[in-house]
Figure 1 (cartoon, rainbow, N blue to C red):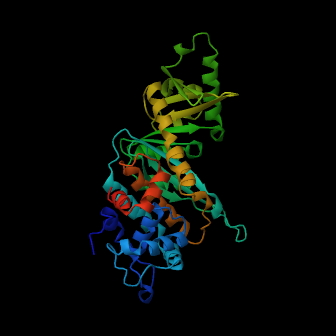
Figure 2 (figure 1 turned 90 degrees about the vertical axis):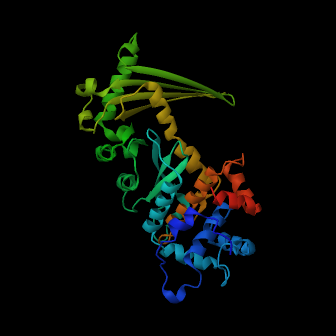
Figure 3 (figure 1 turned 60 degrees about the horizontal axis):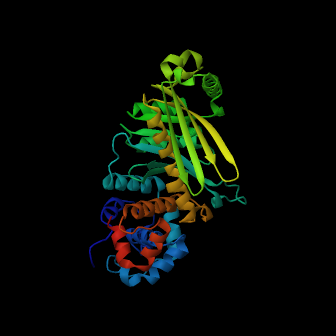
Length: 379
């Protein structure tokens, strides 16, 4: 057999504990994991697809794997990944990500949740599975993910996700659901900074920030009240997008904003207004944030814009290129473990730079061209 093409993946995932009893271990666990990863990279979306991929590529896979007993059936793939401990699989994924990429100081780590819509089972009374992921904006990598407990929400999953990450010197951005005092405290305790979106769920905090900002904007000379202001204009495909940011020092305005002093190391309050001019209509959205950074409006515009990379570069890609929203898996750990495999595939495809095409086209190329798949696996 030739050298294992997965390199560090083989190294970091080989320590997983096999959930099967000894007499049922016809196919090595690493075979099952490798074939699943290769299959998903190459376009497979479920266990049946992965079995089909394995049988069609058996000759190629046999260069790297001991396939004496052939390709596992789709039932075998399903049973193994349902029983495989998701926490252990996630830990291996996290170790692999740390090995292939260093998260640099000052990088934005965006945290956001995504629902696997078709995983809901009304007959059994099961809600759709909800996953919270962390995305490194500069490295363009999924760093980790955490399943939301079925009887809870993102507020409980985010601290568990933060515990997996090394965020010292990084800027963590979270949307309104994660705007919680305990989460802000945990980020600063881990020597990170935060930029948290504030919405009506924070009551007086949102109300007071909105009142103060809008009051100053009505003044004839509004910039005398704000410490910094910046504006960007982007034009693309007949659409104009204008973003403006105003910042206020938290220490000076703390008496005017109820409960602001309860937030760990808070230094800046900011308002961002986004205007989208379309051919037939104009949309304006205003959002408010609190931050532990003492920085400029220009910097905050870049940070907040980086946050949406997790929507555009992860969630949208998983739905449009991997059909994640159409996956009906819901039993045991199957859905969570397949989500991890998709993240492995996405990271590998993102890291492969020679093909100047999108993720969907890269998946097709990997399925058609074994030499290209080998290049993806070796990144």
